[in-house]
Amino acid sequence: MALVRVCGLAELADGTAIKLERTLPIAVFRVGDNYYAVDDTCTHAQSSLSDGYIEGETVECAFHGAKFCLKTGKVLSMPASKPLNTYPVKMEGNEIFVEIE
Image (tube, rainbow, N blue to C red; front, top):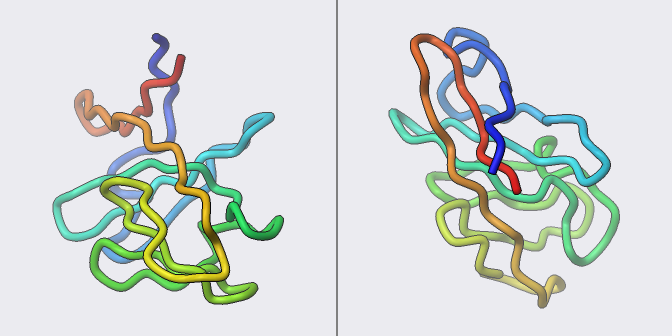
C-alpha cells in the first residue's frame, strides 16, 4: 500500500470534492469532518463523480443521475449497477492522503 497526497485540508471545503489524477482517477469528498475516497468515474458512463452533486454521504452523477454511497461505494440508484471501489483516507498533519495498492 502507498499513501498518495491529495491536497491540504484547507484546499477541500465541506461539501466539495477533488479529483486525484491517476490512470484510474479517484475522487476525494469532504462531508463535515468526514473524508471519503472512491473511484472518480461513474460505473454507468464515463463521467467524473468529483463534478457530481453531493448530498450527505451520497454523490449523484451529473451525467445520468446515478447515485452512490460515499462510505461504501454501493449503488443507490440506476442507471448504474456496479459499485465503486473505495479507498482509505488518512490525515497527516494538515495534509489529506489516500491509501492505494
